Length: 90
Image 1: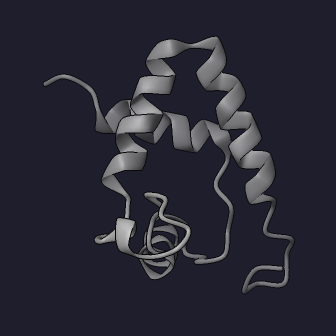
Image 2: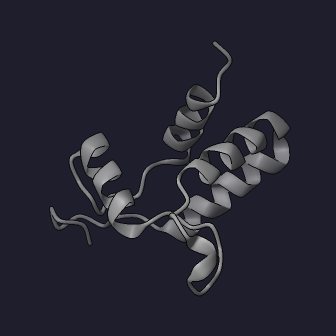
């Protein structure tokens, strides 16, 4: 549940949908990887599980500023749209 009492969606389903889109479209895959790398925590290599994952508090802040709900799971369309926008050539 999110802060408003509505189901928040599933991060697992989002990752699955993004993986499927990345497999089907290499440009989308590149954009998602580049944006994912930008969101990684500082010193991620010093903490278990030693993966470049985003900081939980930072992600909550990003979701709150984007959607007004820090527990909302964004749609795959929103994530892909943002990734393509963030890595576009000037």
